[in-house]
Image (cartoon, rainbow, N blue to C red; front, side, top):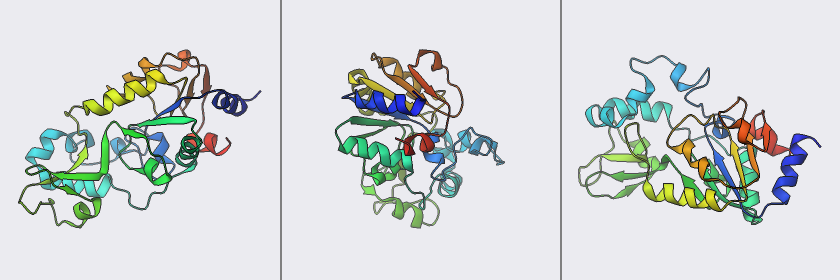
Length: 237
């Protein structure tokens, strides 16, 4: 039995599947990740990307932050790929109970997924730092320079910047989903971003699947490892 057949069989035998995904899920939709050869970390800027999208830099240099953010973090034309679409289909069939994602692009929801736990937030949610009023991505993109609220406060994206804590409610919901799963599929992530990557340690089931182009630190724990692109694998399910 080949790997795809094994994966299909494991899904068929499971009743509570959870998917944990990273940047590799979105790269096939044309969104670059941070750490690949052509990712943001490999591009040349006056400052490293992790500095520009840090909390401290955002507070001290909001103009430069938003210039980089709008130019390099937003991909309005990106469309869901085979992985996003298959996960939404599995959820609609009652197999998949949750998607836990490190991505901020909203492509899982665009594909039709309902229970999406966004560990690092979403570019589609924005709020005033002074009064809390909510704003759309279009509002932020249309603003000249730093987006401002009607009250005068700065409108910031609801994304977790470097130096900031993850949302505790999202963490707890993710832990609950992973703990209750009878199958965990980890895809498109090298599992090096913490604390997000540590959440998989709460899985106690016997169907741990890893789908990633490169090896990860938990390959030895997995019941099935598929070293291939996530979109290619899911398009065959």
